[in-house]
Image (tube, rainbow, N blue to C red):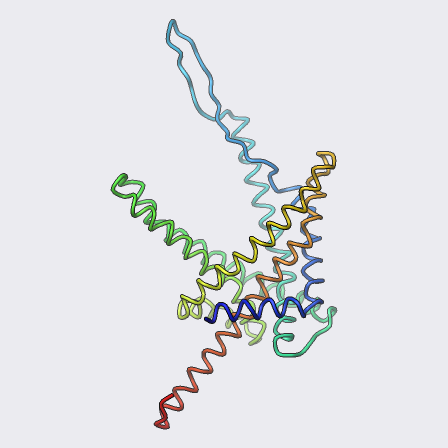
Length: 293
């Protein structure tokens, strides 16, 4: 139930906090040229096949040529560079959006200039938090993929393990989605970077709600992405050398909405966890007084 309430509150804050969208839009516009330049435009099935005829026998050799290997490595390098750029830019703006959402959730409001200042001042802390939870997420995903590896090695009897492994990976990814957006709100609300590292325990203590909220965020992102992809089709009318840039800038307003959805969602889920903890403490106090609720 907490997951649905948190998602509902996320939408409420999204519709009220116009200033926060401006921050997210600035981020998306800054990221757009990097995405257009660094993101791979197509993914080809790379296979080098040569045929050699010896008498009546045709021998085929499969593999990648040095040029194809170089192309793959260059694409991987660009993806890595894009990841670093988005991580830095996101960390630069995330605190301001989260802090603003906390204010709006509490019935208050803050200035756009103040949010930008807060984001710059707290950038190192947010970057450290995102790096930490990125590493934690990688560890969780690798561990959750172990059943898949065992299943593939023991096929066909291991087919069940492969299916179970894929299910575990999906559930783990949903949990990690919630964990990744919960840490910064804890940091912003309590004013201590140490509080952000409590997000792991908070998610594990509320595992079902965390997984459910992660799925809800995915649905929201998919809906936004579908609309964004439809609008970005307009870039096909432009010359190939600028189409990527047109597509990136057309998609920027929707990408800004995605950032807002994720980060404000973290705030809403954090507040729901706080309410749950307060209710639990209240029930314990009543029990101490001999009152059963």
